[in-house]
Image 1 (cartoon, rainbow, N blue to C red):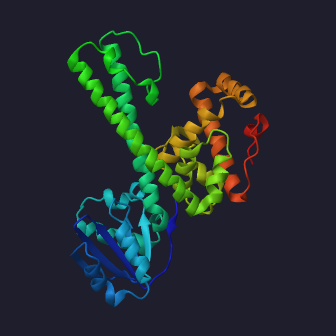
Image 2 (spheres, one colour):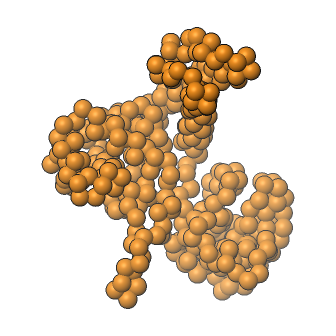
Image 3 (spheres, rainbow, N blue to C red):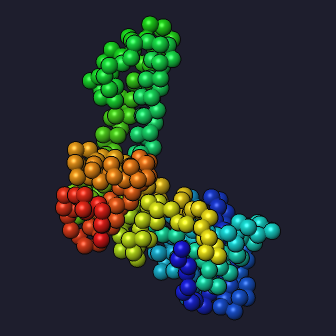
Length: 351
């Protein structure tokens, strides 16, 4: 975890909400210069901080509505930092908790050099990343409809569907498979929604691919060169990483991607692991999927995988392969080199 250690004449903590925000401004001696509740309006914010704007740093906890404030500070030339919500225990763990106290605590954390930093994603890629996450949400909804259709077959003990209904050409006549008219109507609704999702997903995937080529075509094609990483996984990894140079080491990257589990130790004793849910769930999913696809038709990798299975079991073996792929992607992006065909030796020692 990184902490903000910058020195400024003034420190502004903002407890931000959808309709209101509480401001607290401290000077470098810790004296409170402003403590005020405002509407979440740009003009009101700028007017409140105007006497302290030179040398001011603004900090806010990472909540859903931080985008506009970060963009406003950037446009006005004000330093802005984003706080990691899970690490801001000083805000959540106090005996007294209210908006006024939270704003003061945030300002005090910044002044004391203990404000835990989160990555303030830049605006020129941010909307595309959010659209990609929305695409994944729609895909999961489509999968739920397919699962419901398959489960209904089992529910009524009907003959199994012989073809993969995720393909449109295999869904023709599926509704007639259900003799009960009410059940058939339910399945027709599922099929109609699936067809609509297919059209939406096809359109949004084309749009995302075009945007990726505009934003960073080299990064997109480098990721596509990795066996097991297709178009969608390349998009997810690209937009969740944004800039690989923001990770000081491959260990930092693996931790952010949830590819490793930090250990808990005290007095030389190990008490298991912790923090496995801190990091990017999207990167964790992408590399886990890539590990499965990487093994398909890759005989050297399969041999290495079988050795891992005999040592750790299948679940942990897949996690090891995902970790190796993550390390390979990190070094590939750092060096700007295409991925050579990954072999057993490459997986055994990724450097």
